[in-house]
Length: 238
Image 1 (cartoon, rainbow, N blue to C red):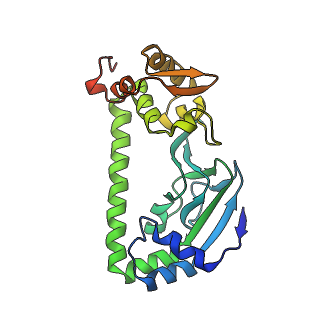
Image 2: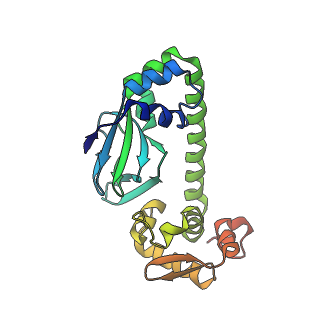
C-alpha cells in the first residue's frame, strides 16, 4: 500500500459525486476533505481483512476491488466486485465495529479513504447527512435481501445467467484485468467451479451464450434473460 500525494482541490469534486455526500453543504465537505487520503494498491494486494479495525470509508478512484469472505472450510465467496466510484466498508464506519469482509485489489487501484471519526462526527452534527446515510443503508439492505432470496429460491444456472447479464461484456470477453474466471464466478455464487462449469454448458446448449477460450460471449440475450428470470423460463428450476 502506498500513501499518494494529492492536490487538496481534487478531493472535493470526488466527494461530491459519492452517494453518501452528494448535496452536502460546502463546510461539511471541507471537513471531510481534510480527513481524506488517497492510497494506492497493486493487483492481489489486500486492503484489509475481516475482523480488522476500520480505517474509514473507502471510495474507488481508479481500478477495481473484490469483497469476499472465507468459509470455515477455506472456500472463498465473492460478495461483490467494485468499480470506479463505488464505496465499501460502510457498515463499520457507521456502527463503529470491525471490518465484516476482506477486500482485495483486482488490478492496480487507487482508493480514497475518509476517516471514520470524521464521518461519525458529521452524522452527529449534520441532520441532512444522517438522513442520506439512512436512505443509502436501506438501499443496501434491499440489495442484500435480494441476493439472499436468489440464493434460497433459484438454482445455479438461473443465478449464473443473472450474474452474466450484469457483468460488463468486456469483462466476460477477457478484455480487461477484471475478467471473471470460473473460480471467481463460483465464489460469487457460493458454489464450486465444477457446478459453474456444468451450468455454463447448460446455458451454452440452450443458445444463450458461447464459451470460447475461457471467454463468455452472450449469443442470445433474450434466451439469457429467460434463464435469469426463471418464473418466465421454459426451463425447469430444479
